[in-house]
Amino acid sequence: MVDIILDDRLTSLKEQFPDTPDTIILKADVLREGISFSAEMAEAGSWSIPGGAFLSRENIPERESYGADARPPNQMILDDDTRINTELDHASPYAIRGNRDSGYTLCRHDEPVTPLSFTPRPEFSGELYDGSSIASALGQRAEHCAAIVHTVFCEYGRDGDECAYCFLGNVQTPKIIKSGRRLRGTNHRRTIEACAAASRQIRLDHVVVSGGALVDTTLEVKSYVKTVSALRAAVGPDTRITAVCQAFDQVGWRALQEAGVSRVQPNLEVWDEDLWAKIIPGKAKAIGKELWIERLKQAIDVFGVGEVATSFVAGIECCDPSTNYTEVKALAAHGEAYESLLNDEIVPMFGLLTKARGTRYENVELPATEFFLQLGWNRTQMMQQSGMFDRYTSGVDADFSCYKCVTHKTCQDYPRLMELSGNT
Ligand code: SF4
Image (cartoon, rainbow, N blue to C red; front, side, top):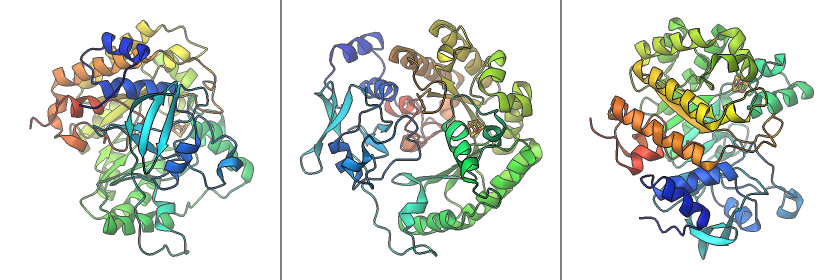
């Protein structure tokens, strides 16, 4: 049992979701609210695995007062090992108090809620070919997990067809275009060398490969194959490699598998086809929903059941100015999606919409935490009833996503904490 002090708000959530583990209730609320930056967080970030890549909501405020090297920890760890992604929001009621000697506490409106810890940065020996440190190129997300990109450039962002919620498409890609950086032939030498060194020194259980989309998916396949082949050679046969990519055809899936991909996650993002053109116009033009789903099914023929998942941006239906979704309607759409996908043996997942800078959601009021908790509970029931959890083992592997590094989602926390996996 985790020692959590529930204030009135958290108690109310618990009363509405009595069977949901307390830490998931707390995590969902922190993910929705974000967490405010503080001197205590800067201190924790000085020795723990740092965040940055996933920091889409806010930058560190007044960086000069915390020092140019100030970073937030990439995740916060609760006592039952539940991990929460760090997304900064100066208006959040949540903040960290304490220090490394006395221990840390997650506070809500400055009242203690629960103890927190962080993962220390590993001390890697050696350096990369260009003299830089292994840690600087690794993209380490948790003790044994890393995330790398095949490219940071998204052609949909270049063409004005970026997904409406995406920081990379709305902010990073325009920045790259403005800077005039060369985009072809992205050099992965540092990243791959860092992964090779890390896999020798700390064991890498898995690496997630994601990045921008290319309009011509055969070119995107080539880019993934190039990156993954080098990665597979670097980390050896035992590290699971997940590709978060677009939906490829059978030839593309086979090429990825031969390169060393173990698992794929081409994200549908939204279920209602009418919303595709408004929210994910690039994917709508280049592939479309019907073909996307067909290609998800083709991926199962190559990778197997339990190795193919697709994720949705939960809450976007209610927040997009061009839609008139209520939370009830959005829950129904997710329910329809999950049922249809599970019938095809595809794993459905969701992440929470975040108020990413530079997107049209920057200042929206996100759906209430209750919405995300209801969605998490509904998904858990459907996964259980379909028998899909039986495809997984337990602990880190209790669901498609690893609970240690996919910290911006709650899906994978349910089967682990409620012991719903591990039946086979
Ligand atoms: S395709 Fe991927 S990288 Fe490009 S805008 Fe959409 S979510 Fe972002």
